[in-house]
Image (spheres, rainbow, N blue to C red):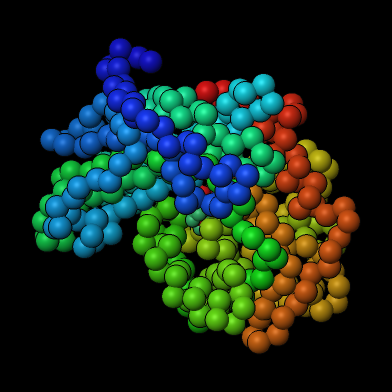
Length: 354
Ligand code: PLP
Ligand code: COI
């Protein structure tokens, strides 16, 4: 830790609630650890973060987060290996992306040291909460929002940066069925789609509810110009495999630059899988599904890891994907999770020990 940052204060809970948690049946993001990190922005500067017991926070009703939605977040995970060592995966990339989101939402950027040292200290304090069951990990949610007061529609003068931790199992339960969306849009050119801004998710809920009424668990968003190209899903980037080529769309100001997505691309290249980063038309995916050349479709994200898509719907027709024995999804998921859980070499230098 450099001398510019004061020591992070740690106030520990008197009684841990860890005994109340059923670690064998964890859902996603619904139980929280004993502690959280809190960092306040006041008088033009971020104060040194502190670790406190996990607890509710009090806000003025006029706080700008409630009225103007100035809020951003990140999603990352900590993994425990068989020797109880704790690992983070590409945390600096999450830090950088948080500040990209901050800039777009006129939120003051977080100093790197506050994020990285605060994150490591918090994970260390609650390391007993990191599940070791296969498929489970500690989901980490850093977020920043406008706590400053006032109805004036302008950036707040006070903010809070928090990190909360949630031991979690899989994001999806059961088969993933997605709907290719043509009416609603998630993001627009020049908009905030590339930022992890809270409102991007709120805006997806209604179209996703409509899709759920038809039996789909997720929406695949298409470009807002003509709904011609596949962009991404609600909480993950999308890959398609046509014959033996793995394809994903290019990131843009409408699409989140997913850390899993770019890791998968690198691993696939390392595995000798042919990859293409190019625009994917809805028409080519539908045609490929019809003629049998569409072999796989999967989502990639921190929460979702790699989630194979079993069926996609388009204009009232459902297209089932084949169940392959040796799928790219299975191969790539094994490679990435082996790196994350320290079960294999990390030739890319992505793991960071806490
Ligand atoms: N796209 C969206 C909209 C997301 O919310 C996420 C999840 O963070 C992703 C893609 C995947 O990003 P990452 O792999 O960095 O988690
Ligand atoms: C993540 O994968 O970390 C995300 O942020 C997705 C989230 C909306 C659950």
